[in-house]
Image 1: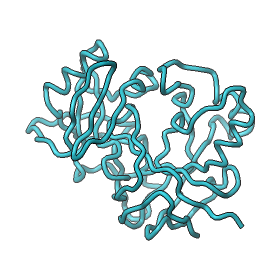
Image 2 (image 1 turned 45 degrees about the vertical axis):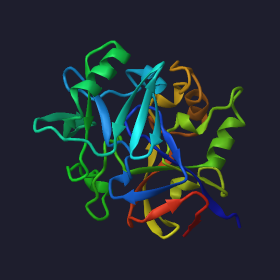
Image 3 (image 1 turned 135 degrees about the horizontal axis):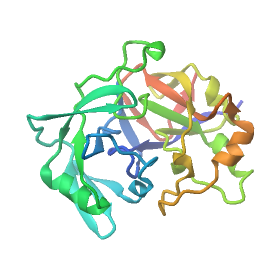
Image 4 (image 1 turned 180 degrees about the vertical axis):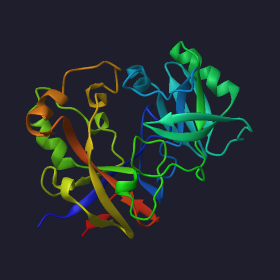
Length: 264
């Protein structure tokens, strides 16, 4: 019997920008602490993703004390964890869900506008603001951050290894932007996970993750490629969707750590 071990923890503080690997993280109802609590919106307050703006992958984020350092080329800006929330809300829609966000500051919005060569705003999504998980997949009336639909995404290293064995040029896990990666077990066994524990936290798998074109974007160059979706489509397609990874809800809200055992 394989032991399943939590091997990687990832957050993506600003939706669509680079991720940060952590040794440990607090689990909150909406997902890991600071995960996708900020995002960019265009001049019409439409949220921006790598699907339409693949070069967003080139803006990297690191954690420094109680703030994030955001770097684009030779330019950088600091984003404090806690910053002043303006009175005027910015209403937007994330995959059909209306959400109320707040512009972080004019200076942050201008920095991103300069980096991207287009008018945009950096907005934040306060923890208390609502965005319910789709009704058919809730367990305890959970809410989600600015992630596409669910608080957490878990992928087995075996699933990635199985894919890479079929590719001429292996791809890293960052193509799939998971929150949780584990070692041990069989390829894609996470598809069937329903109830499991990581450390002292209970989690529930609710829906395999249908993939868009983002896994084809090289996170180091911002260029689109044909793989890995061409290969995945040969053995991971059901109906019209290609699946890779499992969407997850958090039942408990304690800390998790790299090296925690996964139990069922």
